[in-house]
Amino acid sequence: MTTLLVRTRHDVRSEAAAPVAEPFVHPALAPAREVAARPGVARQTVMDLLAYYRAEVLPTLALNTQYQRTRFLAMVDRQYGHLPLTAITPAWLRSWRDQLGRRLKPDSVRQYMDTFSAVLTVGVTELAWLPEHPMRGRKVRKPPASRGRVRFLSSEEQERLLQACRASHKPGLYPLVFLALTTGARRGELLSLRWQAVDLERGWLRLEQTKNKQPRAVPVPTVALELLRTWRQDAPEDAWVFPRTCRAPWPYEYTWACALLKAGLAGSFRFHDLRHTAASHLAMSGASLIEIAEILGHKTLAMVRRYSHFTQAHTAGVVERMAHQFILPVPPQEGVPHGAL
Image (cartoon, rainbow, N blue to C red; front, side, top):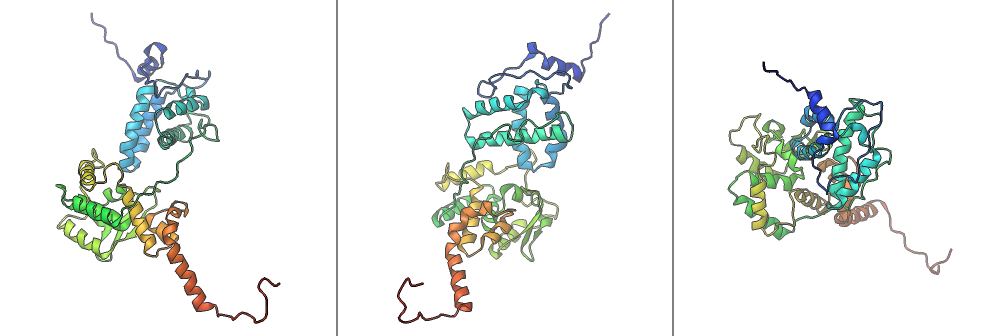
């Protein structure tokens, strides 16, 4: 007589949590030691929390964010999925941070920590699987953030890049890059754009999926509108402006790399730098920091102050026009020595 054994998910969790079934942990990612779980607390594991996050939270994020976080979540699940959530303490997180810092740059470590923190927040606020957030309240210090990187194209570099994109075998690369240069929109915002959100008559884009989750309208200059009209042809309203699949959130990755290589910009320029270039052009054209922030979708001026040196000539001109219009020149008094009170 054959006995059929049925393994439940609970059995799998128990086996995964058992010391004898501990998976291999890469030396560069493993904390120096694992903290024992506190007694008397439910033993949901990191794997349980990650499964919930994948099913309920991840689909609500932008496609590019989903793609990046999926890779990170898979790494965490593979290395630490067997751990009970109560083992993820501030001491464990500090050890994990230090191990990451041995092979990654500070900004990358901060990004890893921010992503894991978002997952832990779900465990605290939505599921109540953790009594408190182990990374909040200055319990785990993050590496200091580097100064914001500002790389923008010179006139010659821009011409070379646009020529290389125009010659690409993927015809969508050129309008994508051109639109990024003329609107300052992020790559993910443009790739999530449908024709129904493009007003070709009045010249506006309605960006629904933005980084700060606040929809915004972006003006499109005439030269870009003409290109978009040609690019659209007879595409329906619900079609993507730049066709892609969910499996490939960045369908122009190879052709973009080829264009950079052809333009002599490989290794020194990223797609996001098109946004910096647009902001720099806006500043040099006389736009104020408030106007730049509104177009780029920044809630505060902190992120656009990096372009302030481009607005100095415009600011000086504003002060000069104010003085010329409202301040009457008064000749100095005769016979009064310099410095007299």
